[in-house]
Length: 356
View (cartoon, rainbow, N blue to C red):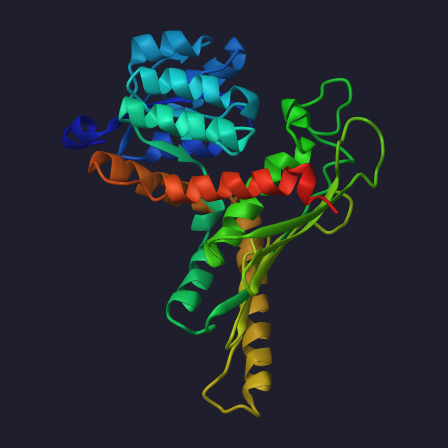
């Protein structure tokens, strides 16, 4: 980092060294826009390891001490959701902007209170909606924006993850804090599904949600969600399954002229649209185009696995745009409207009166 960049860089601090922290820390370690002044975790070993690996200036086990001593301009809160509000308020009070992992708060009412507090502190508050910045989503957005798909009528966002058979969510002896969220573990994922749905159909007036626990037991409140979200004559389907395979994270957008679909775990975008060869030959042209797209995506995905790249590729893009906005004292790429609507939709999905 040059001397000039050092002077312009924002002092950044990270609270929490869980799985997602690697993505945040790697961005901060390599960005000219940030200077990593502190890493905090309850585990001294975890905090020290992250500090050494990503070149932070100091490690802490008490985040309030870090706020007082390191005086960060930006705090990344990467802890379980039940303590997001408290840590965010403390960071905002200390004069820092806050980038918080999803869900920003467990409930919509808590979000409104937190947002009001951020305005009182005159600081920016941002929820990490990183998949909005993945390349396939940006490509579909462009197809909508330039009119290729026509007027959007239908959206489906679907995720399948085998989280019941092992990993951090399946340990009954050491249950994750997210099990205590209103919708249990699924609550930790539906923020992603909700903000992607709202990206293409920006609001809603009715919600119907079917929640199930097919695997049984007390650890998981639910392991399956199938919901319909209505906006006038338009609708969205939001689907999460913890017991079907293979893993997928698919987004389907249908407009009045055609449709596009992507899987963020196997990055590709496939389109079915009118082609220049005419109506009769368009289906054949779409098949050729789709086949080439899938074959090309297979090679790209193989390369990604060799390079140990993850589906979090949009996170670095989101953080870079956010830091640039903070340096220029303008609105970050994710503002109140995006976070509010997402929190409100999640709240509607888990509300008992909307269950079927």
